Structure formats: C-alpha cells, structure tokens
Image 1 (cartoon, rainbow, N blue to C red):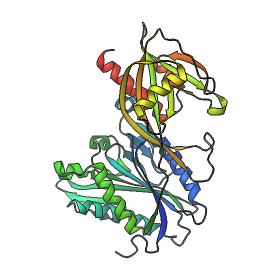
Image 2: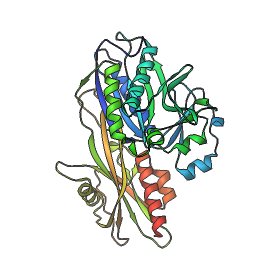
Image 3: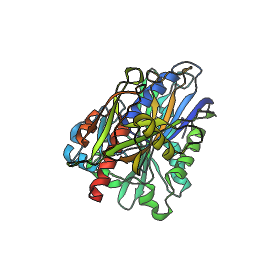
Image 4: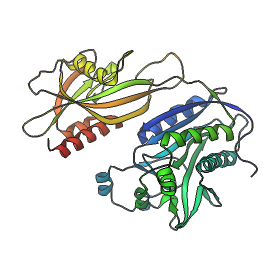
Length: 379
C-alpha cells in the first residue's frame, strides 16, 4: 500500500519504560510534546505499560462503560478522560502502549501516513509470530480473522495539535481480556478483541520480546534515526507503617515548601552502588530516625516525568525517574525524629486518611498493595 509511514529520515529518541500510571503518562506526553516543538529536536518514541484503566476519547461517554463505578473500584480499574480521538478503550498490564510524539511540521505533514505506519508496524509484529493481521476500512487499528469472527489485536487513537502528535497505539500481547467486555471498545458492538496470548497460547512471546519487535518495525516504517537518551534516575518509595490497637497506621510527612510541600511517606534517591532495598532502609533512618522491624517488597515499580518546577535541571531535556516501592513496618514505640531539611511535620494515619493525603499515583498504588497484603494475611 502506498502512503505507509515515512521515507525521509528523522532523528528520534526511544523512551522505554515499564509501568507508567495513566495520569503520569499524560503528564509525560505533555512534557515531551512541548520539548519536540522546537525545531531540530528529536522526535520521541515512548514505549510503556499502563495500569488497568478505561480511557475516554473525545467521542466517548460514560455510557460506553457497561459496569458501575463501584464495581470498577473493587476491581482496581480506573477511568480517565483524554484529548485523543476515538471513544472508550482499555489499557492494562500485558499490553504494549506506544506514544509517537512527533513534530510533523518538519517535512511530515501527513497524519494518514503516520496512522498507516503505526498499523504497519503492528501488522509486521504480529507476522513475526505467525499471526495474520490486517486493516479494516473505517476501523483504525489491526484486525485478525478468528473462528469467533473479526477481533482487534491493536488499537490506534491519536491527538494532533499544531502538527505535534500525542497518544498512539496499543498492541495486545497478554492483557486481561475480560476487561474489554466491560466497555464498548471504540464503540464497536459486533466485533471482539484478541491478543497474542489468545491466538498463540503458550507460544505467546513475553511483553519485552514483542516490544523489541514492535520497536524495530516502528523505527523502520517511520524512518527514525535513533539518538542516545539519558537513563532515568532511580528512587524508592518506602511506605512506612506500624500496628495499632484499631488498625494499621501509615506515617505521612509534609515536605518543606522548598521541596514540594506535599504529604508523603518515606521516599528517596538511590546512591551509587546501592540496591533499592538498601536505599529504602537508609532513607527511613535518615528521614525519620526509625528502623524497620520487617520489610516487604510490594512488587511495584513505575516510571514518571520529573517536573522541573520541583527539581531544576541545567538544560531543557525532560528527565524521568523509576521508583521501586516497598513497605517497612516499624515498632510502635519508636519515636519519629524528622529531618527538618525535608519535612516540617508528620502524622500517623489510618489507610483512608493516608490515601486522601497522598498526591502521587505511585504512592496510592503502593498503599493499596500494602492494604491488600495485610488483609490477605489477616494482620
């Protein structure tokens, strides 16, 4: 097919993350779209995985979600409004999300070519694993003819502002497919959704394997010349808690005005040669003078854009950080001694109060995981 992708080479940087919470993903896209507006800066190809979330495009309504908000909360699925085209769709673990943040003013003012290029990269990725996928007129994305009928393997939803593209594609490797049945995906009622797992079974590739193939095909069809990128910094979220007579309590501290002025538990950056676990224990003691009596990984690591209004940088290139989350239990008898350079006050809170005080998605997700672990263990 003519008009697929681009032939003229363009410099680009690849930002490959693991989990990114959807609101953090929106902030990330906004920062990168601002960055690429300046002529001569490289386009950005962002590859990541989102938390379970239903996203509402400009043509979507809440009626496109077929279950109640209470049910979604119980299942841990969020709802977010976006400025992309299209209706409602789903993102979640096991799905590759790609945001091509491109300045199309620089000789690429053809959105159709970009869309067809994204479709072509997904079609080629599916073919790498023996899956025949194709376009379907009037329905953006890629489709597979299965014994159940036509099913969507990859979705596309773009936003364009002053020839800067944001949002992008979602390619299903091994997401939880029942989540798609809770919505009218892209407003389509007579076609299904599939994944490489549903088509291939045990032969399904891992997320990283499929992402490698998709990345290579995107660079080919979009004629991207890859430039080096700065590695994300690394930090820990050491969610600190103690037992009490009524319910577990979480330590919340108010940052100084100079360091953000929001409530959080213990956080901090890794030092050279330090493991995340070592950093969690060190930060706990440096910030509070407490020592942990037990330590629990929360199996949660996520990435986000670092706002230069909070941390100043010497140049305009966006910075990113990857945070690993832990839960540290402390003895209720230990006194808290704050580091006054970082925090001005503290309080011990029940889960609901702590959740209400938290500002960032990663902290809230860590608290939900700690609560679930304690409820499961009967603590």
